[in-house]
Image (cartoon, rainbow, N blue to C red; front, side, top):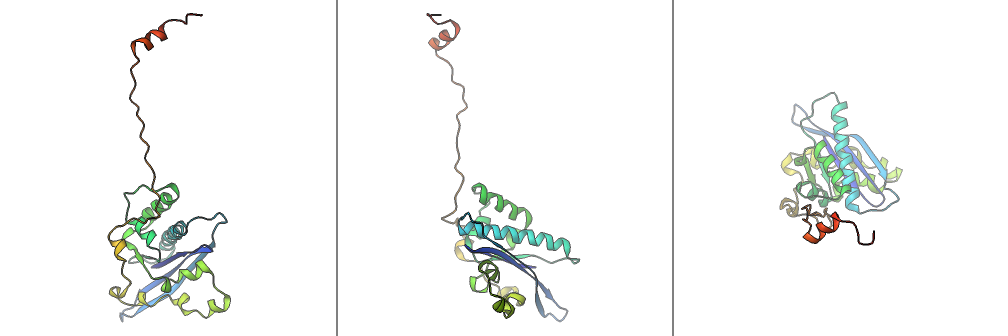
Length: 203
């Protein structure tokens, strides 16, 4: 199963394809499901929308693996946003709640090693995130059959960008700040202890 995820300020979406290798070793890909949503009116960063699309892809994979009456060899997830991949490759970082919740969902629902990078020009989920006219939709072979590379041997698939491989954290990633509390009990001075044992002069 190959899942493509994408987001824009307009919308976000996921499109899933089933890749099958026949007995003649020919590779076939077919559209299984597409999903799209308009982004909320409350604007946020594109990185968060992309991460939300990634969480939807992980959820979609879980549902399809349950519904399809066939054991799948593996699931591959494609995104054109390196920030998503950098989040997933830095599990030790403590992200803020929005990112942390989606990161944990993706981590718990999918295999992190199955997440890969695809160029925006061949990410079919981009149709779902930006929208597509009916005429263009019906005439788009890319949407129905997916890009060419899943129909090839894995050695021809897109490679991961170097900055992702090196484990760099995205500059826009907001981390939780740690607050340290000193819980050591302060011993009262001699005068303070005396003041608490006797009533005030004017009482």
